[in-house]
Length: 131
Image (cartoon, rainbow, N blue to C red; front, side, top):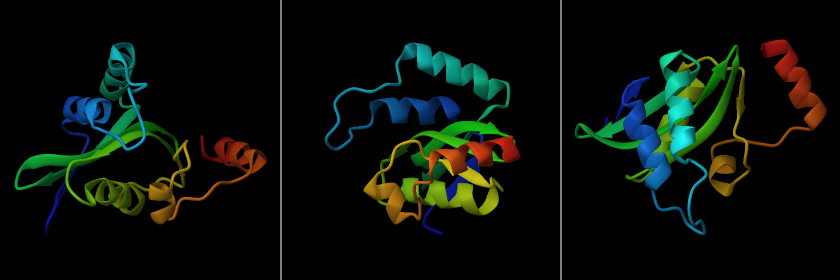
């Protein structure tokens, strides 16, 4: 395989890359030091999960988010190699058994992976069933 995938390892590196990676049409980041500290604590408590993607033993992509019940709230992802964040997302969907993934922000990238918007009422109903 071109990539190797690991779950719940290298969280500190993943959030660092999510915080510092250059993003098209974006300046700055919402992931400040307080957010890093909060998500790190939640990760240690088991509420934040991450998927790491490696190429030749080097971390090249990944994502992290809050996991509650059958719901994964995606917080951020990064890619240093073509398609590596897509590989992380597909792994999350295929192997981690979440019934609902909240991508939070609609984007062409996420739509290309099959994401779609749902009405607020349906979202709240899903949360009530899955949390």
